[in-house]
Length: 111
Length: 111
DNA sequence: TCTCTATCCATAGATAATCTATACGTCTGC
DNA sequence: GCAGACGTATAGATTATCTATGGATAGAGA
Image 1 (cartoon, helix red, strand yellow):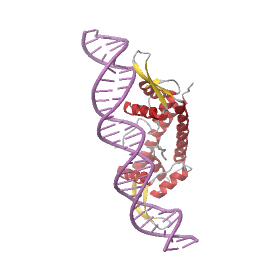
Image 2: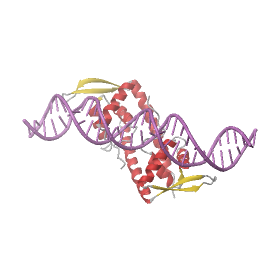
Image 3: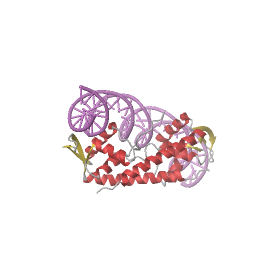
Image 4: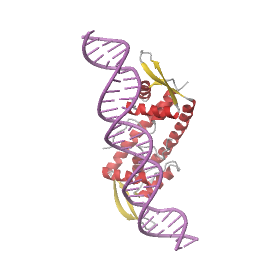
């Protein structure tokens, strides 16, 4: 049985980076934000999210610091770096190119 | 270093099924067709293609038979089954829903 | 005839990205 | 006290790619 992913593989980093262009956020907030903006279509599982954030940190595309949330909890806030913003641009344009290409294949008329 | 995929993961089965709606084709022909229709953006490697065709056969979404090509070679031609056609519809609509959702996230304005 | 290129099939193994499941801790409201 | 939302994190399984091979045949051109 083929599993139904909650996410298109390969798009998570892009979605996280995009989310952080609005404001620094903690992991939980990033997941909520993506879910809400996508009208509940996209769900980011913790097991995908935190490894992804580690990747982004390692690449230098985000930085992190511990702070207090509005609700008075310790949380790790991630901020987009300049390199991250650039990377987002690259990923978005590659993604759009892919989507356009897939669109052309799907649009080819079949008998 | 993050690898640059030739394909959006998760979309290959859909692309193959779609290609077969036009006419039965052998593996090599499927790969060429996707490449050409996408204006060389999407490249299907053999190591992705043949396992994918095995998956589709196992699921009963395509059937295969050996025939001769126009160029006088033995080749395995794959034909879409009724179940495969139905599956294609499901995959396309899920894909479009995903793309729309990602679009909403990417469109959210950032300061 | 020889060699090169395009056509064709297929698999093994590595890699990457996701999901499932789990564990832990805190704050607020009831 | 307890439930439910908030919040971080990792281990392990799964799946889908890519890389790298290996093999075979047809046709064109030297």
